[in-house]
Image 1 (spheres, rainbow, N blue to C red):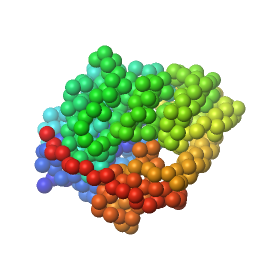
Image 2 (cartoon, helix red, strand yellow):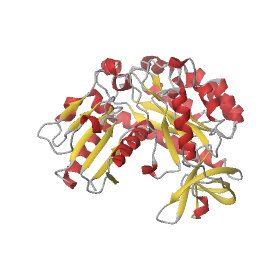
Image 3 (cartoon, rainbow, N blue to C red):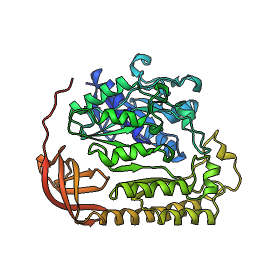
Image 4 (cartoon, one colour):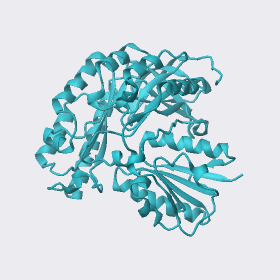
Length: 441
């Protein structure tokens, strides 16, 4: 049986797409193996948000070829869409597949024999209008499924290549979406994470929106909860907030990109809100759902970010009741408006600012987790690790560990938190909510 190894770089959306590519290989008689194992075919689903992601892709290709010099190497994803010729020049790459082509591997490639020259299958930007359905599959052996409902982006942030790599915003047809969602529930996934480039933009081509979709999803029978992977602050409506507060099937957690705590930098970034708007949203969430988990994306070292503007960002975040930060160091991206902006920040200064915000994130997370002591959380545990420990997340995205018990796996368990150790909550088991498994349609 031929073997394939798949590796994902980047976001949860990429992860769901890699899973679907993996299911195509399973359906064609392949065995999926870990990337560190020797395989006949290696598939890399890439990211282009930062230069590091592109550099890592090139390093991984070389590593795969060291494991098996005769392996077939295919590269897809955003990096492949934006700079296919650059990838085709990497020694050992056999095929480059763009955003439209990533789910057509077995149609486009007649065989997986090594080639002297890489084949490039990449559609131009104006043709990136297809929606490739994707979600986690049984190949992942997970309790949580990443479910792609939206792709592309109509926003024009000055630092971002995503609209060029994925095209305009488009969504999965509502009826098809609900059918696939029910299949995931029936297959036993207890947490379904809605992913996309701009999830909050869902449905405008169908005269619907994310709130109306969520209303239908929570009516689906079954023991599950829904988590939104990320949502822009200007798209997190009062209706979605109230639905989240009132429904047990909605995770009490939002990941809301901010990018900068300075209005001057937000303007340069061409973001669609000001810091006052963002602060009002966060405080509203905490009033409605006191124990809500809130994650924040931040970019440091953007052109023009003076010491004073960075200090504004730091202080703004320090005073916000958020739970953790995802911190990105600004990386110059070809063909973006930001690359031609004046007042570039030295790389060492960018790294310093990144480190400061990561320390702040650890402080925020520890404070948030400490607030959970004495409270009872409903946790979805995954399989055991090598130390006979099960790990899982609560609805409000708190990481929890417990001694392994087979009944905990893929069941919602009530844990009374007693302490926090190394940014992980520990506690006493108070009950397990078992559910009757449905049969997949």
